[in-house]
Image (tube, rainbow, N blue to C red; front, side):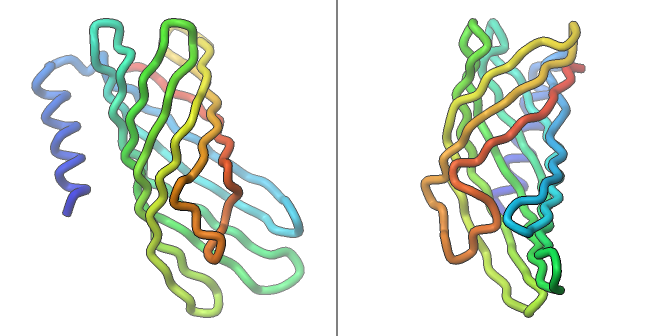
Length: 163
Protein backbone atom coordinates (compact mmCIF):
# COMPACT_ATOMS: atom_id res chain seq x y z
CA UNK A 1 0.00 0.00 0.00
CA UNK A 2 2.82 2.43 0.87
CA UNK A 3 4.34 1.99 -2.61
CA UNK A 4 1.27 3.65 -4.14
CA UNK A 5 1.77 6.57 -1.76
CA UNK A 6 5.44 6.96 -2.74
CA UNK A 7 4.61 6.84 -6.46
CA UNK A 8 1.77 9.32 -5.92
CA UNK A 9 4.10 11.61 -3.99
CA UNK A 10 6.70 11.55 -6.77
CA UNK A 11 4.09 12.23 -9.48
CA UNK A 12 2.49 14.96 -7.34
CA UNK A 13 5.85 16.64 -6.82
CA UNK A 14 6.63 16.49 -10.56
CA UNK A 15 3.25 18.00 -11.45
CA UNK A 16 3.37 20.46 -8.54
CA UNK A 17 6.70 21.91 -9.63
CA UNK A 18 5.60 21.56 -13.27
CA UNK A 19 9.15 21.00 -14.37
CA UNK A 20 10.28 17.74 -15.93
CA UNK A 21 13.82 19.17 -16.10
CA UNK A 22 14.12 17.99 -12.51
CA UNK A 23 13.46 14.34 -13.48
CA UNK A 24 16.38 11.95 -13.84
CA UNK A 25 16.12 8.49 -15.38
CA UNK A 26 18.76 5.79 -15.27
CA UNK A 27 19.82 2.81 -13.26
CA UNK A 28 22.25 -0.07 -13.26
CA UNK A 29 22.73 -3.32 -15.14
CA UNK A 30 25.01 -5.87 -13.55
CA UNK A 31 26.54 -9.16 -14.60
CA UNK A 32 29.17 -11.10 -12.72
CA UNK A 33 30.59 -14.49 -11.86
CA UNK A 34 31.90 -14.88 -8.31
CA UNK A 35 32.48 -18.01 -6.22
CA UNK A 36 31.01 -20.27 -8.93
CA UNK A 37 27.81 -18.19 -9.08
CA UNK A 38 26.56 -16.14 -12.04
CA UNK A 39 24.54 -13.01 -11.19
CA UNK A 40 22.36 -10.81 -13.42
CA UNK A 41 21.02 -7.61 -11.85
CA UNK A 42 18.63 -5.05 -13.44
CA UNK A 43 17.72 -1.80 -11.64
CA UNK A 44 15.97 0.96 -13.62
CA UNK A 45 15.33 4.11 -11.59
CA UNK A 46 13.59 7.47 -11.66
CA UNK A 47 14.55 10.38 -9.41
CA UNK A 48 13.26 13.87 -8.80
CA UNK A 49 15.90 16.55 -8.05
CA UNK A 50 14.69 19.20 -5.60
CA UNK A 51 16.16 22.27 -3.94
CA UNK A 52 17.72 25.45 -5.27
CA UNK A 53 20.79 23.55 -6.47
CA UNK A 54 18.85 20.33 -7.17
CA UNK A 55 20.99 18.68 -4.51
CA UNK A 56 18.19 16.71 -2.81
CA UNK A 57 16.75 13.72 -4.69
CA UNK A 58 13.79 11.41 -4.12
CA UNK A 59 13.63 8.27 -6.21
CA UNK A 60 12.04 4.94 -6.99
CA UNK A 61 13.62 1.81 -8.46
CA UNK A 62 12.05 -1.56 -9.27
CA UNK A 63 14.71 -4.28 -9.45
CA UNK A 64 15.31 -7.91 -10.42
CA UNK A 65 18.30 -10.08 -9.52
CA UNK A 66 18.95 -13.65 -10.67
CA UNK A 67 21.70 -15.89 -9.24
CA UNK A 68 22.59 -19.27 -10.77
CA UNK A 69 25.12 -21.67 -9.29
CA UNK A 70 27.39 -22.90 -12.10
CA UNK A 71 27.54 -26.68 -12.40
CA UNK A 72 24.16 -27.49 -10.87
CA UNK A 73 20.52 -26.49 -11.23
CA UNK A 74 20.21 -24.29 -8.11
CA UNK A 75 19.11 -20.67 -8.63
CA UNK A 76 17.59 -17.79 -6.69
CA UNK A 77 15.60 -14.81 -7.92
CA UNK A 78 14.95 -11.62 -6.01
CA UNK A 79 12.62 -8.81 -7.08
CA UNK A 80 11.07 -5.78 -5.47
CA UNK A 81 11.26 -2.01 -5.15
CA UNK A 82 13.54 0.60 -3.64
CA UNK A 83 12.54 4.07 -2.51
CA UNK A 84 15.57 6.26 -2.01
CA UNK A 85 16.73 9.71 -0.92
CA UNK A 86 20.02 11.39 -1.72
CA UNK A 87 21.74 14.57 -0.65
CA UNK A 88 24.38 15.82 -3.09
CA UNK A 89 27.18 18.06 -1.87
CA UNK A 90 28.71 20.64 -4.22
CA UNK A 91 31.84 18.54 -4.78
CA UNK A 92 30.40 15.40 -6.51
CA UNK A 93 29.90 13.39 -3.30
CA UNK A 94 26.46 12.30 -2.05
CA UNK A 95 24.77 10.54 0.84
CA UNK A 96 22.33 7.80 -0.16
CA UNK A 97 19.65 6.00 1.87
CA UNK A 98 16.92 3.62 0.77
CA UNK A 99 14.23 1.26 1.91
CA UNK A 100 14.10 -1.94 -0.11
CA UNK A 101 11.20 -4.38 -0.08
CA UNK A 102 11.95 -7.70 -1.79
CA UNK A 103 10.67 -11.20 -2.44
CA UNK A 104 13.10 -14.09 -2.90
CA UNK A 105 12.34 -17.47 -4.45
CA UNK A 106 14.68 -20.34 -5.26
CA UNK A 107 14.69 -23.49 -7.37
CA UNK A 108 13.74 -25.61 -4.33
CA UNK A 109 10.47 -23.73 -3.81
CA UNK A 110 11.65 -21.68 -0.82
CA UNK A 111 10.21 -18.17 -0.53
CA UNK A 112 10.93 -15.19 1.70
CA UNK A 113 10.08 -11.52 2.04
CA UNK A 114 12.85 -9.18 3.07
CA UNK A 115 13.35 -5.57 4.03
CA UNK A 116 16.70 -3.88 3.53
CA UNK A 117 17.97 -0.51 4.73
CA UNK A 118 21.14 0.30 2.76
CA UNK A 119 22.84 3.58 3.67
CA UNK A 120 26.10 4.95 2.33
CA UNK A 121 28.19 7.32 0.25
CA UNK A 122 28.58 7.83 -3.45
CA UNK A 123 30.34 9.90 -6.03
CA UNK A 124 29.32 11.32 -9.41
CA UNK A 125 31.05 12.55 -12.52
CA UNK A 126 29.58 14.34 -15.54
CA UNK A 127 29.81 12.42 -18.80
CA UNK A 128 27.94 15.07 -20.78
CA UNK A 129 25.65 18.05 -20.13
CA UNK A 130 22.73 15.79 -19.13
CA UNK A 131 24.40 12.46 -18.32
CA UNK A 132 26.13 11.54 -15.05
CA UNK A 133 27.87 8.35 -13.97
CA UNK A 134 27.77 7.37 -10.30
CA UNK A 135 29.31 4.89 -7.91
CA UNK A 136 28.21 4.14 -4.37
CA UNK A 137 29.07 1.93 -1.41
CA UNK A 138 26.10 0.97 0.77
CA UNK A 139 25.89 -0.93 4.05
CA UNK A 140 22.60 -2.74 4.71
CA UNK A 141 21.67 -2.33 8.37
CA UNK A 142 18.97 -5.06 8.07
CA UNK A 143 21.18 -7.60 6.28
CA UNK A 144 19.93 -11.19 6.67
CA UNK A 145 22.76 -13.71 6.21
CA UNK A 146 20.31 -16.64 5.88
CA UNK A 147 18.93 -15.19 2.61
CA UNK A 148 22.04 -13.41 1.37
CA UNK A 149 22.09 -13.17 -2.43
CA UNK A 150 24.58 -10.30 -2.49
CA UNK A 151 27.42 -9.00 -0.38
CA UNK A 152 27.29 -6.48 2.44
CA UNK A 153 28.49 -3.82 1.83
CA UNK A 154 27.04 -3.41 -1.67
CA UNK A 155 28.87 -1.69 -4.50
CA UNK A 156 26.79 -0.06 -7.24
CA UNK A 157 27.65 1.87 -10.37
CA UNK A 158 25.25 3.33 -12.93
CA UNK A 159 24.18 6.31 -15.00
CA UNK A 160 21.46 8.98 -14.76
CA UNK A 161 20.08 11.13 -17.54
CA UNK A 162 18.46 14.50 -16.77
CA UNK A 163 15.39 15.22 -18.90
